[in-house]
Image 1 (tube, rainbow, N blue to C red):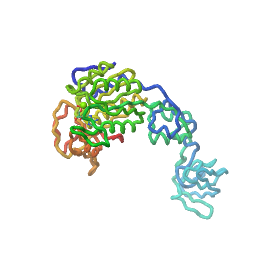
Image 2: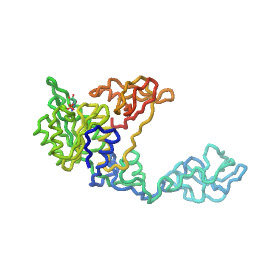
Image 3: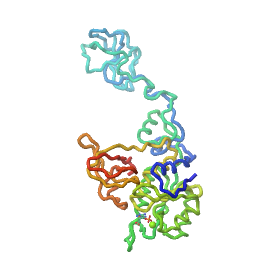
Length: 410
Ligand code: AMP
Ligand code: MG
């Protein structure tokens, strides 16, 4: 159910209203482990073996039998061989014997304790071990990281470097992932000019389509770039119909604010079930959300920074949910000290572009340049949003504010 609302929506209300009706795409495919980077697991990865596969040494040193060591005195043991990583000692560690062992080498049969090389003395072919060694010390047990048959990664996990490495550590060469989400996107507006050509009078270059292209690519979506569509009803209607026939999601920018090009709102509403929301945020107040045919649609504002804010706060999680990511990543906010005063009226949540640093043992944040909703330079200079919640008023210099660090998408 799409929530229609005449009154304006709070941040959390809008997020809920978007996420509630969404269900993940159902298609999946098998891909090689490397190609799973950025993809979402369609089924759990079950460990086919123990990791580590064998009991092994965590240190360079000597493998011994703890029972051979005297409780309060130095012990002398006969060195009978060496165990290397990948080249085990084939014999048995008998009573009174020790085996020289390298990190990662399999523990020789009979031994149960590793003594690090830094604390021993060597005399001829004997090793002298000080008192105070604990049984089973410095061992890594087979299956200690992952036991055979256990869930190594749950379905719904999006694979980053750690997951790809983990899958490889299990010897798995192929996994099942959800199909990529197909996202159609276009810019609207008669004033929007295509890059690589001279700018006409009153025109602005289309940056939104490039921002969206980049963020969608980093999210692993399959893209259908539909270019710039003029503010003409027939052109827009055709674009919406084509997009809804070919994509899971339609993203547009511009044309959703009240008053200008009202037919876009009319069109979206006529072609599908689309709600127009005033959200209590700055920038990014007007936004459309709904469904046309089988596609979800997000009508983002036109201003370039408003596009980025609404994408980051609303669209990103929706795309992840539709891609099968579960649970969704936490929105991590924490407090930092602001180094200038900020004027703010209570009533809506404001997102400022900020520059976060760790100075003198504290997280400090500065406002990253001019904050107009068209200023992409300060978006580029920023590494976080400064989040001023709805009920927040003015902030004094040296006061505390919430920050939301960018997560690699921006
Ligand atoms: P609109 O919501 O269509 O009124 O657009 C708001 C502002 O954003 C206007 O100044 C537009 O020129 C600008 N804008 C809209 N679309 C884009 C775009 N694709 N790239 C850059 N600026 C845009
Ligand atoms: Mg416009």
